[in-house]
Length: 262
Image (cartoon, rainbow, N blue to C red):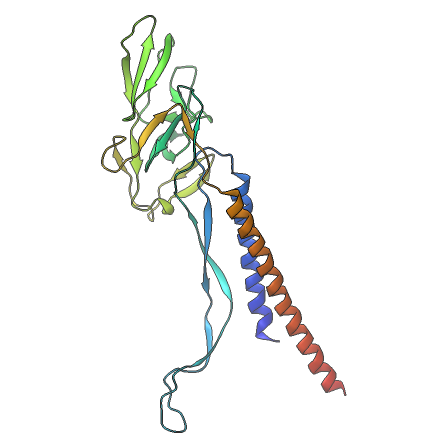
């Protein structure tokens, strides 16, 4: 069997995974705080028929070798943490991070991280995500608060009754990672720490490299539809080209069989 069959098959599989990844990016184009993923690939092992630098018949060293590759394999999907567009909602509890950093939330006693700042309050007045997970450290908004103000440094002030002076009810701290691309996606706009991401560094918004918090805004997905559609077309054409390589190999075998049969 021609090596082109298995090699082209790996190429077709790779393009299928690219299309799957693009589909996920496009599906989340309106997801708050979503970061697009890109796929990285590696070439497979090579069959070495002749080594570069070998001695030739005339006593010189061959400048090149003779190597045939075995195809490609997916290596990783990497999140691209570029800033998403800021959408002005005007809602007090809609918060966006301008710059680096993540919000911390508690999920069944475990800490998770998110860029989704569409917060609400639960029955106890605690600040929670749209899935009901509490912000960590916990912040409770008084039930009789007429408005809430969140500073760029994460300070949360509640204005109760007719008082013009707000009462501090907590501070939203941010965390950052040495390698945010190494975070594990848990679904629900949540990320978890891994050995690849490193341990989180907690800090105050606007200080030590942390981003600033913008109240009344949501960070939209950083997916660019035009870019994804171009990548989709490229993947489709690459898939077709790999399938043609298989057809060309099949035609070659058919021709060889006809010669044998004659």
